[in-house]
Length: 259
Image (cartoon, rainbow, N blue to C red; front, side, top):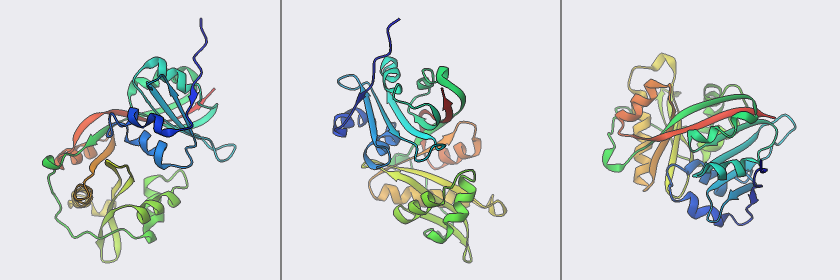
């Protein structure tokens, strides 16, 4: 049996731009990591022109996870670039569900969740905003982080998104009770997320209002609103469809420990 083809380290990231931009919606996460995230310092490709691109962030401490994101159109290309993935814990994103297959034999543990990628066309948008909304302020970063990702120190990330991206909240007096923000923007799309309504304020249409307000802002700036919803989250899937979002494909967010 022949040994796997070693991945090719990419020094000029412009070499993979055209490959990723063949699908600016489906490849938005990988594009963001390649061109906008300084901590993702390593890029690998397979094929010329590329058939697979892996972008990798090495762990910042001995027990921290490796971060990586993969887009591949060819199984052999995927296997080649995945040779660059380090042993130990990892948090990662895959543009297609089939890309899990070459990773599964290497994983001691694997927690993979399929998520629907949704996108919104301007002509499909249904504005369901019925409440006054205001920007979210950085003072709420800690509270949002505790509800979004309570198991890891996400407050600095949440604060950066409040400070550097659009956000909309519904307030009860001065208390923030519902919100929606973005994870990142590329030159083509804006990735929505963080949507949450405090339990005591649910079933009042607040999620529709903050989601609508954010989608309107994105569309007004000429970008495509996109978002991920885990495949088992029926209420959030229903909300996305009520606003006019359409399913694009299933993608994967996962955590693993690799041998």
